[in-house]
Image 1: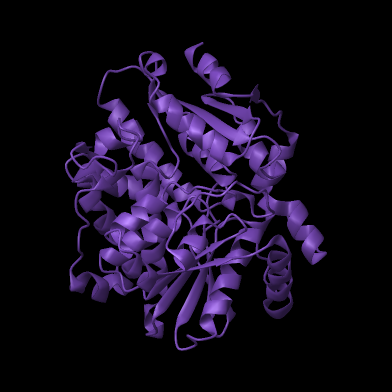
Image 2: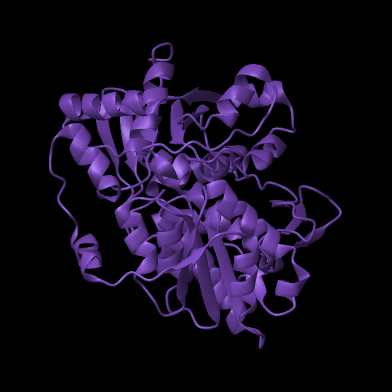
Length: 431
């Protein structure tokens, strides 16, 4: 499979180089030269397949030529070693829980897949260490830190916005040590992301460090997220209803990966992009005009993204045709107040504790299902409620039991480096 830059289609490379580069030299995001189509028989036999077999068959066309089938099988086995249950909430709405991995967040899948892929590539060449430079609005940092912890030949530098991630999220990326370094940025997520992109193009840095990114801009972090949708479809196909997925969206990598699965033939009827007040995409879907917004902090902080990088990939999937995109995607925005009300409603009616991001996904799905009650809707619960402990316990007036892996974090020493601007980031990377 070849990949090209969405800025310049003539800028092509293979999967391995695209993963190691992170973004193309012209700062464009990589995109597969073609989207593979799976045979109809694949979807007929999915329910009887082992999850790992199904996932490997879905992913192999994207890595063919760079990762042998037997190596991919091992990567998939190590990546998907936890559950992805769909929990019923109402008669026609379920919650797809993506938080049963090691850092209790949906990003564990992409981070682990990328870490093992990069480790494989690194083991086959005698080159200088690779530095994974990544920005996080919350969960990416912890998932990447855990996925790459101790991987030989790889250093990880995580940029996170000061005071704008939850306590648990901060602990997950500042307490590991070893090859993981956390940089506390005086700004918002978009500032962190812009610093990462700028560093990739800085020849002073690239002459001394080989940089790659583990944000969803990296194809090895982005593409494996499609596996959630295959797994969910496999468990719900027996309902024989059109399936709708409502995705709490920040940088739009997750929902974009789902759309890739749909393009491969997975029978997904519709997607719903749900945001908080950082609503560049819902506004675009209403007006046809895309305009980045100034980032506003919310209780669903992982979605505090004013200019989502992956939206350009979504536009490409549908040929940059607004009407085509509107056929497959609806957009909703919700305030913190509405989010809290939804958390209370879900808890009161179903005894289910949703985190703020899942609650935003539920709200959009609930609105959509008013006129589509013949369908089955799934909202993605992207993080364990414990990761937003203060908000959840205050809103629901209840205590959330801490998993043992989270309890242990509070006894560890936090280490981070304060960085005020790009010049200071550059100084650190060159030191």
